[in-house]
Image (tube, rainbow, N blue to C red):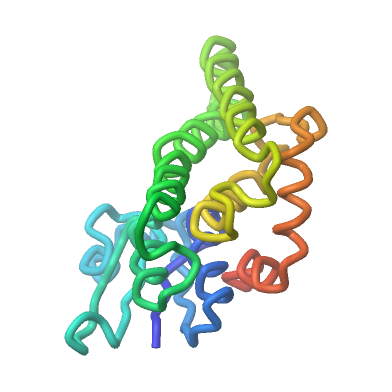
Length: 206
């Protein structure tokens, strides 16, 4: 059994989508980040960075429980443990991992900054708004070029797509029109039609 500590954010939804795709049993523990529940001592013991998502796998390595934080690391762990959604070796594996890192290092942090300055900042800061909106557009352009001639980001559907999709699902938050990126739009529709993606995007049900 997997215990999933999460909230309704793109990073949280990566893991619920992954668990749904792998058809694994899991228990959801909602961590309301709006109320600061991520700073509770009990959660800190699981996630040293006080951020969701985190998991506890009761059947970790050597049969012992394993707590994990950082969504990219969790995706890789689950894929490797269950032998799905990440190639085991060779060039295809590194292709998938580099696009997973693209999401972790750029298509996530930069879009999160766009969300902050476009939606939440207590004062309008045009320089910051333009900086992060421009970077969001650039990153969508990178993704659009990568999708030329392929259905999924790294060839076969896998962890890179799962990591990227929940952030793309908030394209309106960072004021990006997906019509300007037709290959991203097709990919977005393709993933959104997957039953496991739909179920994972609805977690936690609060």
